[in-house]
Length: 142
Image 1: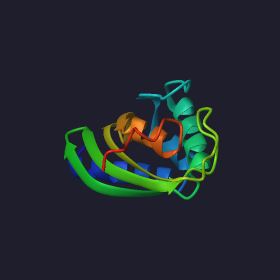
Image 2 (image 1 turned 45 degrees about the vertical axis):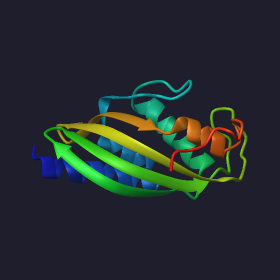
Image 3 (image 1 turned 90 degrees about the vertical axis):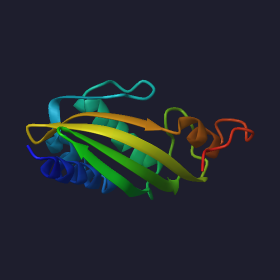
Image 4 (image 1 turned 90 degrees about the horizontal axis):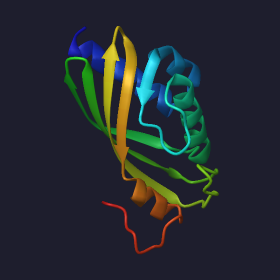
């Protein structure tokens, strides 16, 4: 499959995330999908769907801005920023109603027109500080 087509599939995946379309996410993810789950979320497609639902409930007004998309064969790298308000509990952290900015970098692998894996790294310490789960002396990266 071409890098261009893989980028299109990843764009559909990100749009499904952005619009909280978990049915579309389920369709786009391979049956043996893997990701790097935070907290007690299980690896695999259903664990990821549960994580997405919980994250979007915690940040219902989230806006995902795609900054850069690069393709190399089956791999697509996405640099993104999410902004939103912490309005729901997430991984045991009660809602703070704080506005947050979360930066991330995702390496998404596409095989046979399905998302096979998503390895995402985020500024987790910065996010925890922004929602009040860490002392204010910890600052998010700009």
